[in-house]
Length: 561
Image (tube, rainbow, N blue to C red; front, side, top):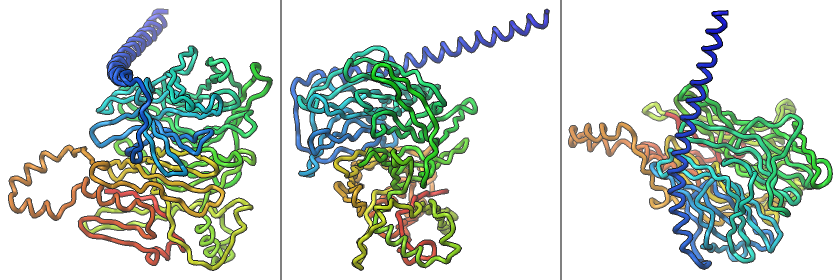
């Protein structure tokens, strides 16, 4: 009994210690939120001084990622709101609002009184009622140094007919979060998943909430069946009949050690089905096993809903995580998911399909009988100093829809292939059968490039991407301020070496300069891979890679020291 009593006492002591630690972390998170709330309040006080709507014709929005791009429900316009930008030292959050006129190819910045505070990784959904509405929920705000986070749980609606913002204060909604997903299903906004992060703690969600557009009230759905594991950044698509939603993929992480976290890229699929009459619905989860060629695992992909209820997935990144490092392979491929047939297929451009057929026509019977799924091609270039530069190219399988296989072959010359560069966290939407893609980011080494290019692809024709705004590689938009830890030591050594140091400096290329040079690789409009390394230009045209593949697709670039 004595030993048992001591054991119980130890257990209670451990529980008490854990409770104290949890309380301490909670207090720290609360202090962080209070600091950021004060900063957010300053932004709101400045916005409150605006008393009238001001619309100004402007250049395209500045480089950004994790904003929202939505199609106007009644006009040939796109709506871009919020997002973030990081220059190596400082994080910028936006709450600016832009309208893109599709017919005129012009941008207008709309400054409307009392907007939502700056945010990124929120969700925006358009609905046709009331002359058109843009609903915005959640998202995150970060301190300028990127070390503190505030997660919103507010709900806003932009009345497009009157150009007015309204903060909807309805109780019982989801907790503060970002990276969640929100879709329109009948007359409800459904919110799934997301995450909340503080300086030392994080949590992922798999709960589902419904907001009624009739009663303006929140309710948490009680679901049955096997639900997806907690995650953020998944693909969420409403079924065409409005009786369910489909979840694909996503990202989550767990803490494996005190200061070590491990991420998981999910590639599973689930259906959340609605049964029963309005007001008496029952919701149940079930796992989906789609046919066709699924996308290789990735996170940070862009998503939109295309014609005939097809979900559109573009790009993303697959991170290779180790305890002390993180490397990412970025993609610029396109996949479509047929929600009716429960089938994936790669969204290949028609010029690529023709070249693929020519290639298959030359294959042996054994090669033709082999599975034609996604293929990875890897080519390494070793520089004189031993640095290995890896070109990794992912080629989707040649599977296409039956109606897409009826091609017109007039024997004309193939035009140069135009495609967006590999990226993650871009903003995407579909309007009248056309996919629009804005911004996003990619990385070269430790440097991040944030984009402001703008592309359009006709999902019916699938012939070629149209460049609406070219990438701006200027110093003003791509300035990188991060300094390496050894920079001060290097400067001292160079000063001591004098003229010899200056000579060495002219021969060596800093990581920042290398990044600027590598930026020219990703314009996606040249049928070659171009490297500039240590003042030497290495160009690999189609002929050089002919032994690897008979048709060229822009590869995923990774620089590895």
